Length: 292
Image 1 (cartoon, rainbow, N blue to C red):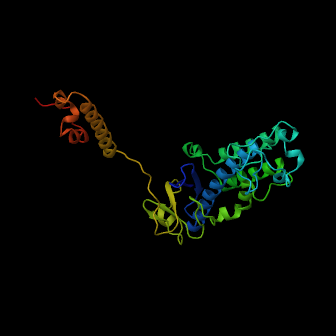
Image 2 (image 1 turned 60 degrees about the vertical axis):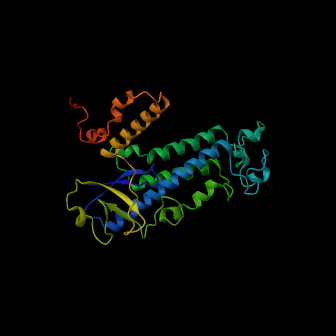
Image 3 (image 1 turned 90 degrees about the vertical axis):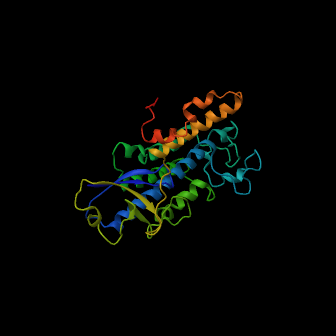
């Protein structure tokens, strides 16, 4: 089986292994990889929203958000009385810091249902699985989304207000999967491309035409919005660049220390950083040699 190691600079949380074959159409593999990427972005957004839902209850109306400490009962018109939780029993509203939510959190069992679903969904798409060389099937990503939706329906059987973030994200699932939302890291399935070794994979061909027939192949792919727009490279300094920056930083710090010392003390001229040829010798690996 051919393995794609999918990495994107748009969202560092997303990295996974996708399993396919050399006989697969590039177009099909591309759309499936991009769909999984879009679903993972939605899962992270949903998990964060559901955690806030478990802690502080549904969102307040757009007009009331951030205006005061007291939550309006009108915000809970669409929520069952049984799911208002401890706050509805007289223990006081659990309003969040920015007063975006009503402060009526679900009871303890429902909180556990919501938080457990978030933990399981994030674990299913964790980038650690790529480090462990474990591919993620598309069906598992679908199941993670279904788990989040199911937990929300269990905790709020009467439904959430339509202006609640969690409800809006669940409603937009299809748009996320197709890449039709304007959000960083989301790619349109119909026009997106996968890039490998500095070139886009031709969507009109099969993988074997680019990779050969060896099924034991692993490649690193990155998504882009089109065949003419290359993915943004990761900003990593390595090799000589890292050595040069480290040497320049040490020299700058030493110069600052020298300026703070006595101006008539010329002993600093004998230090290593004062050698004008020091950088050249460091990069050539000859910094340990001294000539007398």
